[in-house]
Amino acid sequence: MPDRNKEAARPADWEARIGAIAAHQDRTAFAALFEYFAPRIKTYMQRSGVNDVRAEELAQETMLAVWRKAALFDPASANAATWIFAIARNLRIDAYRRERRGQIGETSDVALEFHADEAPQPDASLASAQSDRRVRAALAALSAEQVRVIELSFFEEKAHSEIAKILGIPLGTVKSRMRLAMKRLRTLLEEQS
Amino acid sequence: MSIEHHPDDLMLAGFAAGTLDHGQHVAIATHLAACPKCRDFVRVLEQTGGAMLSRLPPAPMSSTAFEHIQSRLTEPMSPAPIALSPASVSESEIPGLPEFVRRYRFGKWIWVAPSVHMRPILLPHPSDTRVFLLRSGSGTKMLEHSHSGVEMTCVLSGAFRHEGGRFGPGDFDFGDDTVDHQPVVDDGQECICLVAMQGELRLNGLVGRLIQPFLRL
Ligand SMILES: [Zn+2]
Image (cartoon, rainbow over all chains, first blue to last red; front, side):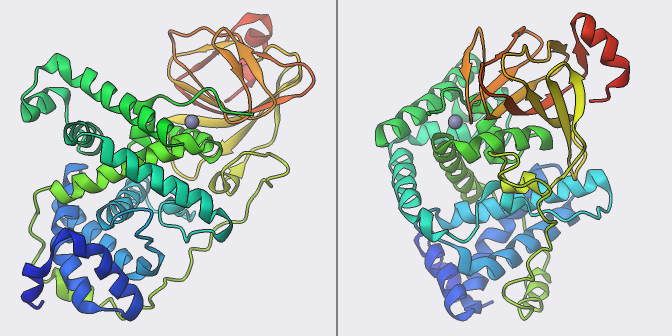
């Protein structure tokens, strides 16, 4: 993997790199994405309770899907990290279900359940552009603290006691802060529509 | 007609994080198919998922990981689309079901009580939550029951009302063992709901006790 990518890999570039994969199967761009995201996806998988070997496999599968689905990425609707997160989440759900079932005969596509990385539908483009605008505005207006508490409790699945420790707030405050963050988000989205 | 009743914020967060039980996931997805507000809400939450991913400490990948994946990049760019099973229920037959749910296998309509029928949805993956369609004739009292777990209901067509308000297409109702609602279907149109039910179902009333032994919901 060329070393110069290490330095150039700033978050702002991820979207362009996915675009480069879509446009001309740019392997250098892919190498940079892999170097940054694969180890983080692995951590995400480990924390979701799978063993190291499986976590590594799922991180690889996620990155392979990033390569293959690059043309479906729409930078207006999600940033690169969110798009990659959704792919990782869907693979994790799929893996979890398969594990419970053993080898399943039925096929299902978890992405369809979220509509996360579907190709944009032309007739819905206005509605989705407005939705993109609302989502961006709401995100920008949420405080970093509010985003952090949502992140920790739902996406990292931390216990309230751990969140209290990480954020340095009393245990009793965690739940109310979370509720407030959600309520604020609702209000923000309401204001935008 | 606007949607008045939405899933709890925490359920939507669970949906975005992908941590819901499969049956509950289906119930929330059914509401989302009808509700742009909650879709936006989920999209913002997904963005925090992206923020979380960027913040996680990296776990070193094996030394051969990149070589391994490189050897697979020559495989076709767009993978052959997954051969999805055809829809077993059409949009006109049951309006309001998300497409992925319409591809599941459905059981037959089963008579439950006068003017009340249910139709099991056979989830492709095991779930602690049973999912079924519930069809109740206009003016009927819906299945009077209690349950030991959580119950999610999303209205697909028609409407019912109980102490909590009126529930029309897209509306989402949530119940657990602390809630004892007795929904009554509006006059003039039958009501079809998608229900995701956790735990044991206990039918109340004489009819319920009579049919309980024959019902395997
Ligand atoms: Zn809603």
